[in-house]
Length: 545
View 1: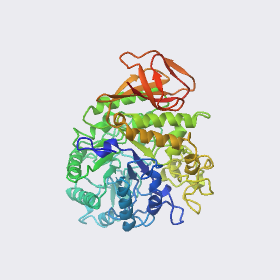
View 2: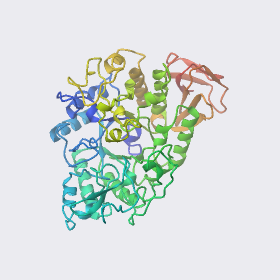
View 3: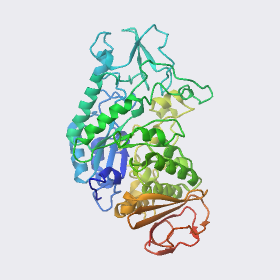
View 4: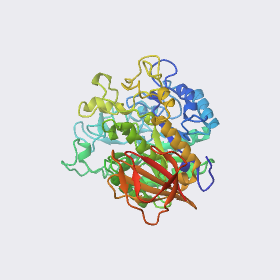
């Protein structure tokens, strides 16, 4: 993969998210670990038969009591023994870089664990030097400071009996929010970031970046009783997130990243309720002086409809403009896998190939979630196996996020090659069909299709760097767009339907092309673009003359 100073590596990269507990267990405790990732690096990159990814983003691997499975950190500068130790991490980093794979850490600095030494000190007394490192509000028990509620349910304020005060937590009671208005907090966090940058980490994914600052006056959020099912959704979150002070911190953070060699990158999780807009995440990139990228979950929330995807793409292009680089994702550790969201009858693999082609050929950086390349699904998790605190609280209305976190299926063995013992979450019921070993041997498998797509992307500069022109965007069945880089033009045609579809000639479009990749036609054959005709669920990627 070529790169230069004007086109940093992360713009061309295919980034692969690993949920470490669920990727590969190397020591037989039923939980994935860093040594397991090392053992599977050649599957991801470094050989001709690799998937071909360019960077790995790890969900948190820091020490944690695991009330929210690593998103409650008790030590920012170490590795949880469940996953390994610092020496194992350094080996992993070295092995990644030997394969030209970048390593991206999850940066969770809106809150810590309630067992972090900072918070232990903060709650020890009202006059402790770290008291103001968190958000405390004096009052009487039973009289809440305001109406803010936690994203995971209940009040966002927890009474502390010892100091007779409330502390604020945007998520669980075991995740107290840091007070970013305290300059000592910012200094400590920035020192920690430097620690990982000095080790050679290539970038960060910032968890709930739009939550960092809260209203200084702690004003009540407006409510709308009819807005959602849960109390959290019935509030307009004006005062507990998206505060303007966040942008100043992100500008300093960007300067820190830019002071290091090697194009260190950042991508932020800017949470918003579905369906969301591209405008909010774009705002946290500033004028290319804050985050490098921000996730636009509107794409992930979009239903199976090419017109709907086209609208999201158009909005993304409009809001980001030419300065901010887009990114796209269809699955992650918090959302049901897109294979399950989009499948219909027996068309799951066919639709998954359409989704893969779209994700990997749009202008921007694609983020893949482990297992999506083999079509892992989000299965129903019985109540007795639920681990997610959200699932435990809201079952059966909401079974939680465990469905997106089941162990990776490597083989068709009892525990799918993930472990030699029963894993922390149930193995997929479909492991006989949906596993790496089987799909590596099938030329038409979803895994083989992902490999072909990713390697095509590496080969064609127009797919990595080219501009985008939507040419079929108002059709209920077909999505079509051009990727253009200097004199090179690539046309992507995707039939989202289970029937053959035709489309009249497109004005100002070359009428001849050669097939680079197709689900239904031979590669390197000529294709005449008169009346466009696509087979059911056909992917057609053409290089135009």
